Length: 115
Length: 114
Image (cartoon, rainbow over all chains, first blue to last red; front, side, top):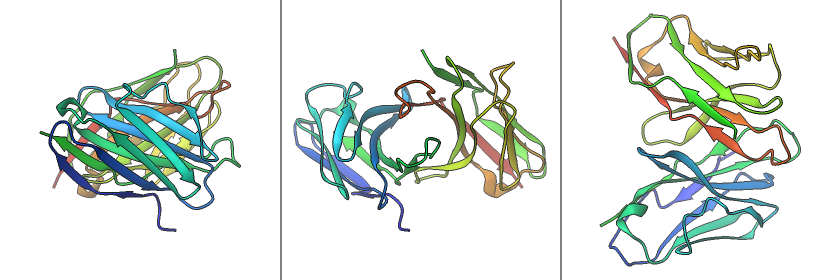
């Protein structure tokens, strides 16, 4: 099992540019989550999907953020336009739906720096 | 609302010392409780979990017991190694309707010196 795969590992961009982060969940997992990690706020849930459908996006900070899951093996998180305060590590995680107590499995994250 | 509070770090120990990282939670009902570990440059990895009161989760020498009466899930290890240096996160999964809500503590950094 390759685990959750995220790309790129690092992204440096200028303010105002569009940023797209990518995630491939573990095969067979029904749920996909996007988290953001900062020193100030810790781990924050941005959005999660069940069977490719967005279920809860209440954590998305503002309209500049959008997420899609066109199929069971791929999801994107897009920021347009990016701002310096978006600098953080973004994690994708997945979990299987068959077990009530199944844990989250995290990718290695994308470190985003907006200058 | 549901939340997790864990002790602030960093915690610095010598190799073979005893480790305790405190974690307490607030939740209605009976949440599931987890400890995750994050090594530098990596994502969080599940370390152990407990799903009901008095359960003890254990893995790689780490243990934590789900204490309903004190709403705690403290992480312990009898003899730490340098390789245990990492950030440890306590987390709960809400027992209510939205069981996909995981709440994480702020993390405790552990430094183990040789």
